[in-house]
Length: 156
Image 1 (cartoon, rainbow, N blue to C red):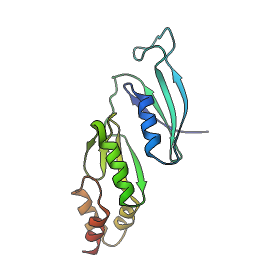
Image 2: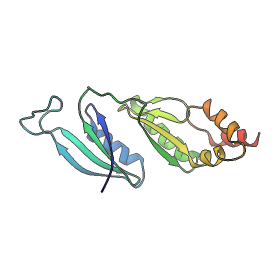
Image 3: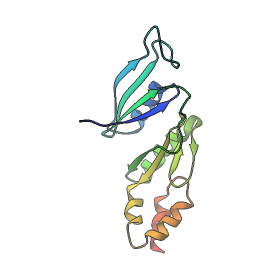
Image 4: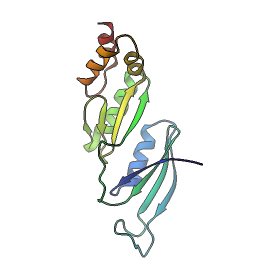
């Protein structure tokens, strides 16, 4: 038995998949299915991608070009745990570029409308430690997470 998460988009799924695999190391695009001709479905044109299977750092996903009925919301996000501030900055900056948007507590939205959480591994360590409450309080005031500021909060 296999499982994956299916994420409903309103178009541009091939572009989104190419963007995502370019940002997350160890990622790839798999099978792409296309709308048939003639197209019996209410969204997508004949030949447009209907689904794109992809793997992001070993986790399988399926992007579905389902139309505007169910727009993306913050209720679903992809969490990426990274090593170091350089990786936080690289991934965050790429996700919010070209129409994406910053949110709070390490959350952002990409230009396709999908929400992401960019989490430094160091934050997880600090939050689980004896100063976790102070670390979490500092994190709640941030947009992009800042490892040095989180470590300062932990140190008191």
